[in-house]
Length: 419
Image (cartoon, rainbow, N blue to C red):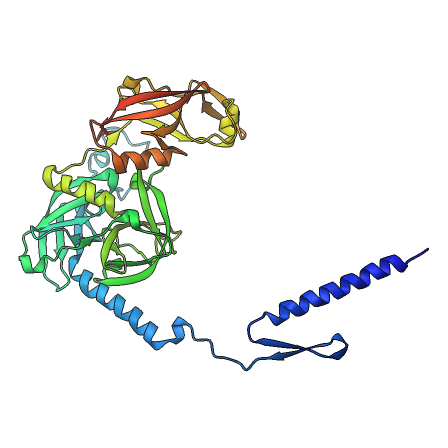
């Protein structure tokens, strides 16, 4: 067998690879190369140079620390600790168990005492909104509170009254009668300008420890947070996710940027042990800016409402409805009776099919745009209604119905408060 040709090719490839390797080595920083006779290459490491990073630079560290110190000095006087007393229900257990053999008129069955009335104490945070004494916090911090005490950064304590609350955005406003020089309002920022990777600074009262500051980054944007943390209900859109440590007691406190501007209200954490696990959530400042003035003026906020429930269209759902698997949108599953969508003629699912092994509603309208803004899923609809609409406004839905595109005008109503 003649092997001369393959050996020649192999030799040529070896020369090529050797040449490439020399070229690559010669481009590595800190390495110099020199070709010797017979093609040998001598590699000489350059003298070692110290690499100075930001953490090794005292000036960088000092600037970073100084920025955090300025933020704390600016914001902390605006953050308050909130303590509440909430009625508790105790199910009274008699000293003796019920005896099914006792006659109905036995005296022991008539001697069950009433459960004693008592209160539980809760802690949270809040921040000064204006010099009229309005303080913003989370709805769940003051929900059902019988007594609200506010402690300022200097230790002074005032009794507060509830001004207004909105469960669906988890926001509430309370008011104290305090000296104006003690009431130092925060500076609100624009949460639409927040970007992943930016510094995030939380100031609040975790575990009742007043004036605690923690630092992290914005770790994600545009999360949806179930109202009351219960799935299946309304969602708070555009929620900011951060790894700045947040713990019980931080609720109602501030999440600020490096300029000290409030970009969100620290509201919830995701954890297996009810303590910081690096995933915290803040209601964005732009929702706060929409809701709080209404709470101060009228005690409530009217959320624009379409009156539908649905789900994000998946490739499997799309195929079950004879749509292209790449079709994006929100499938309408149910249209609420008496809702704006029912009045406008939006259609919900009318049949079921097996999708990914589960019996799933299909056949409803698929919303692909709202006011010409693309809709990739239900979260897009919720966010648009929150950001850009108000009660009484008419929006145009672009939908796919039986595979054909059509438009539907819907006049928004106020979301029902009872459900």
